[in-house]
Length: 364
Image (cartoon, rainbow, N blue to C red; front, side, top):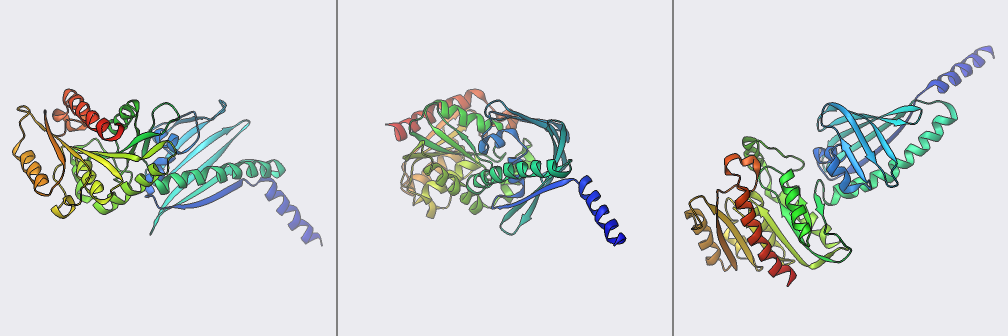
C-alpha cells in the first residue's frame, strides 16, 4: 500500500512539472520547400492567412511579428534549424514563452507538415492553454493546406474595389517567382486586372544566373504545366474574376509555357510572351486559337533578329494569330538579375505594348 502511494505521488509530481505539448500533422501536395516558405516568409504568409501585417527575419535567428485583425500582436524569435526542412520559433504569450517546432517531411505525394507546440505550464492552466493553442492550429492549418493544394507560393494581386475584373496568369522566367515578378503583378493590378503569379519551380528562386540556368535544365515542363492549371482553376473559382476574360503572360521561360498553356485550354482569351527562348513543338502551336503577342528585343534597334524572324515564320506556318514586336534592348531586359541585359526603358516599352494588347483582348 505504501509502495502504491509512493508511485501515485511520484506520478502526480511528474505531471505537475511536465511541459504540455500540442501536436498537429497535415499533408499537402505542395513540395517541402513551398510548404516551408509559406510559413516562414512574410509575403507568402500574407497570401493565405488573415493578418494585417507580417514580418519574418531572414537570418538563422531573428525576430518575427504578426499583426492580427483588430491590432493584436503576436511575436517572438524565429530559429532556422535546417533551411527548407525545419524551423522553430518562440511565441511571447503574456507571462510565459511557448516554443513551436515545424518539420516538413517529403512524401510520395507531397509533404507532411508536423507541428509541435510546447507550453511551459503545469496543471489545469496548461490544459486550458493547450486547448486554446490546439484550436488556433485547427483553424490555421486548413487555410494553409487549402492554399498549398491549389496555388502554392503563388502571388495574388487585385485592383481596389469589389467588382469582377479580367484576370491574368503571370509566368516567371528562369529565376523563379522573384520580387520583380511580384512588382509586375502589382503593376498589372493597378491597371484593372486580377493577377495570379504562378510558382512553377516548387519554391526555388534565385538571383544567380548560373543557378537559374540549372533550374531551367532540371524543371519538368509537365509539372510546371500542372502548376499553371491549378492556378488557372483558382482564378476561375475566384468571385472577383470575370472567368470569360482570362489571359496569360509569360517572361522568358514562362513565355514558352504561356504558349503551351494557351494551346492546352480554350479558356484563355489571349497570351503574351516576352523573349521566349524557343517555341513549343509544331503540334502544340497548331492548337493555339487565341490571339498571341510575342515581344522580342534587339540591341541594334527595332528590326527583328534572325531568331525572332524564324519564330515569327514558324507561327505563321502553323496558323497562329500572332503579333510579333521588337523593342530596343537585349533579351532578358525585364529581370535585374540578368545584369547588363536589364533595361528599365525596354521593360517600360514592353509593358506599354503588352497593356495595349491585353486591354484590347480582355477589356473591350
